[in-house]
Length: 358
Image: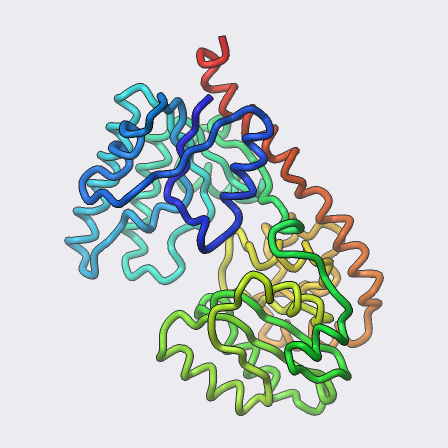
């Protein structure tokens, strides 16, 4: 079976590379689009492959929904849906993995939700990473639940490199060698709750004295980066502002004792799974999808409706057995094995497209 994955986000996130490699080990040939096409980019990418594509596997849809004003965005939304429809009419089946409810910084949430609802009814099969996401999707989009498969997001254990000694990692990053080190790493964006984390850290310096908070990643834009610089200075936190190269990611996770992810809203979190991949205890809101992902390693989750929830979780992290929690985190991460995920994904293709396996 020949599968086309779109859009191609392999440069920004190893997720698609890991999935494609695992699928290829199961006998599925995975292709990605080549070049840029302004008109009908999806249909043309499928048609211009040197082999017959049986399945189009869509991931994130926001690259196709352009426009800074509502009317332009509506036009692009309709063009996108027509593009997918043409793929369907050409005999290619379509699978969509729903990674987000809607884009995190969208200015047109109602329009984007409508577009995704139309897409959900247009594709052959949908994939979500959590059972709770399936329930939400079925209710919100009024879907037949048998069209939606629950397949977890795989781990990142082989994506960036192995961990090293914690003290050596701290030396290489020029970070304090004593005390607990709390890490928030990834693209720095408002929905991740970083400002709230810095505010709590500033207000509770006496409780968290002797420990270090490190914020590392590329800000969404220059203005947001400047805001975080001011807040980090007030909180006494360390801000490493800029893109973190892949070979430095193991250093940060090796240096860290706890990863802090105080999301405002999230469906699937690659940052959470990255922390699990290095066996790091995680502080995060107790939402259905996060609880489902962490399993028994949920010791440091907090009530997102409680204004003091994050503070309580930070306090708890100074008292729990972090080594024991780390071991439990590694056990829970074993569930996110790519071989299992590839088999489940292949079965999703096979269940809908038996004629390609004659």
